[in-house]
Length: 436
Image (cartoon, rainbow, N blue to C red; front, side, top):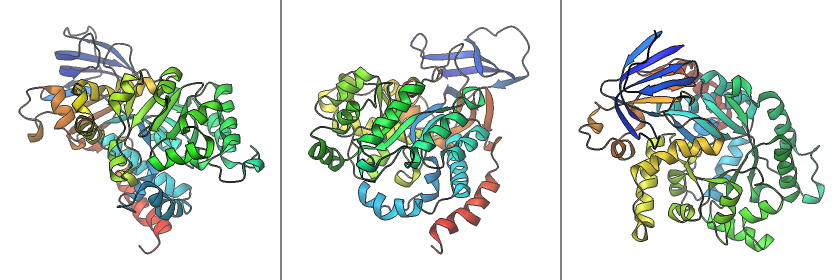
């Protein structure tokens, strides 16, 4: 479909023209055809007047566990490891395909309504999530997060379910929807697996040219226990087994040390900062100034709703800016609004190998409109400042993913929210929580 946006105020994330006013943005099929102040020639199937709205690239949420929307607020008030072992793992053991489908669609609906157009998700029953993402319309890098708690001496790809999951996910879904779905290799974390599993997953990634997605040094105890066990950090012990050869994303990176950040920069690994989740679980604050100084790129993620309680990337941007400037800003220049916006858009796109995150001709048409007539965005002295510090997900009035409008003026165009609610309340919640 061909669509022309007119009277556009665009935060392009293109260094050549960061903020463009009174512009035209033309979309043909899945791509942005042109961006400029002159109306492009030709006829369009639809013209959209953007007066009073700001266009920006859709958010790239680089670390999610989408079906955990079912566990919103469950086990609150705990540290990460208590939360996982006493609350999350027991509930997740009850999940079936239907629960995962309902939770995935609920999570995707929340993301779409708040401006996300691309995600990197790590979860079980991953093919079910792939089906949901394909139907919803957003782009998704999907990973199953290999876990192995058995004796390392007994490890075998034939007996480790997540090895089979990697193979099946890749064969059935990598490149599905003309590239809408991509598959990443993945290890859940150093502390939930072992060297033979790392070696197998690393080999699988190298064989198929896949990026990696791993939780890394989220808590101090995780980081220190790894050093006690292996004599080195999670980042470096995984590197010993080839995990980072193709780059990828390392979620959290709160407690990197001993050259970890420099190693990641060398390997092309992007740190994914999840500030709200890390604060809620009392895990700490990733030192973004330090990571940047070491040459690492930084993107943003929400983590799962169970540890966040929302998928709102506006909230992540504001929290990231505030906590960095408070915790580390005394010795650094302040992170600018443009810096934070880049983490939420173009940095994430680059980390996932997606040609999006920028409003420029030839890029994938992942675009959102934000209503700047809303009381919380008026008046506006600086558009980027308003987006980072004033906006929230409810200000999003349109979401276009891959050239298709999937949400507009409060209406979901690819998902049936009433059906999703019915499946969550009628089946998924009773199935995993019983009478609670």
